[in-house]
Length: 323
Ligand SMILES: [Zn+2]
Ligand SMILES: [Zn+2]
Ligand SMILES: [Zn+2]
Image (cartoon, rainbow, N blue to C red; front, side):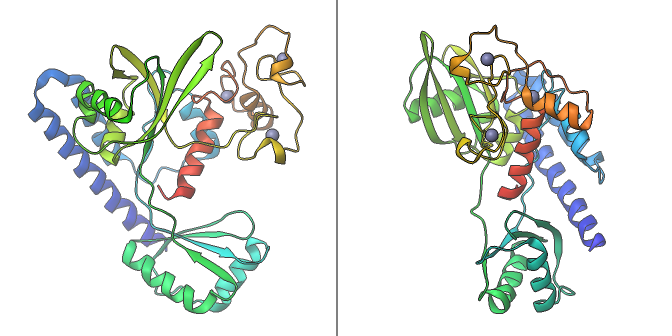
């Protein structure tokens, strides 16, 4: 299995390099107008090709992400081909592992990763789509009485765009993105959602758009996007569930077992009932520092999209989604 993993990694590095080289060529053809972008893409290509089997520990991911103020980490878009093995009854992942062990011999299956999820769910990665089909067929035959064997929906990268002060319909937004941002010129953009946000006196607009992997990689190297007469902030569009009560991640307030945390002063009351001066401190980073002594910068708002703890949960969620 180790060898398999290594091969997969080498093939991926090659693929990423090829894509990046192709992108560099495309940009060079477009002209020298955007030399900066060109050199940025070259850097990705260089970095990616020299990346070996670097292990990203929890602490490392957090620390790496902490530098995102100036140079944001380009999220990986590598395509995975996962299978989800979901028990029909409530059980532990130990039980699921036991059943797998008893029912399926993995000797000739090209499996690259196995991870336990919640409630006995296992996520199994294989080397490619045809191998996945093969494994799914075996699992359907051997285990479908007690398990649902699912292939997750194919996810494309998304961008969350904010700070827009002028309302646009989907076509107008796509036109702006394509005509005003070199790296979004080619490829398909789909608007998933647009909505307005009222903030004291102002109204502004947010959008979630779907792009392809190449566009996503190059766009994430930029600080802002040009949209009409504005420069707008944007983030990775995959979202992590945030609790309104404790400001923690991956659960909702209705399921929350923690204490209320005010996002302004971090006191034990609702944010809407706060009379204190706002502190600009992040409860999640404070907790992570206390627990793991990571030395993270705590000076940002709770649930900021640049929060290193948020980014860590984001990368975990993306892994679950299959990329
Ligand atoms: Zn909570
Ligand atoms: Zn407060
Ligand atoms: Zn934080």
